[in-house]
Image (tube, rainbow, N blue to C red; front, side):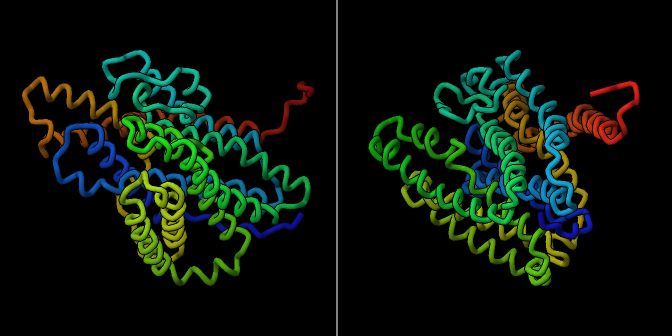
Length: 384
């Protein structure tokens, strides 16, 4: 196996900015699509669904970077450690949010949940029908991530065992290209024949927007960026001075994606819209991690906090907006006013702060203790 020199770790302020932007974009999109809202949010949030794609690219980059760091250090893939990190990071807040949805029906922003087992097995995104299972629908992105991160370490372990790690680049390219084929097939067979019918939009979401096999592009782009920066140091060195140009290139690609996705249920948007968006965000992520780029250079407390709270904010914002608006409605507030929007936003941030402080941080400290114990030698009296 080829051994690569591990790169020194540093805090990437640019990624904090991008996480903060992603959660803000998603928040505005959901607020404008699901709840009574001020008219100005419609314009700002029109492309807000792509905030999830940015999360996919960021997640692919960060998680793959962790795995590649072990490979670069010659340690291979420590699957138990990887699994422990994911469990303690994802499950506490996720299960709490799911428990609230199950136990308190009045807190649900839509009609009903998908079957509970689908949430517990992270398969809720498969066959999701928004008409009957619209509550906590945003869990679909977590399902895709967890499915992907169950498979990714196993694939890397297999490639390492076969001494074919470099063939992983071909696998990434094959999966990326395969996404175009699968989306075209789904559009032709499950969406196009039903255009004009009342439930055509449901079919588009069920067969193109939510399925794992149609939405891997962002994760694949993130993994590709991580691999490029980890295993191609010469390429990384050439890119480092051009972080701002990468940011501009990403914005240009996203502009093209915006017009391509003007009608998201069209053939062009359905087949090429997601990967075009993800390539744009991939370029921006590359720019953000280049030293000296405008996103890497500056640190702000606001984006650091939003980035830190982004996961719990993503999980809970629909519940909090729904409950807050119900309370304000009872007091006679205009739910489409800027004042209501401000109160709902503050309420979401307060809940996210509390959950981060009272739930996420204690479990992350517990995770660190568990990982530390794994590094300690086995007591002499214990045999395995």
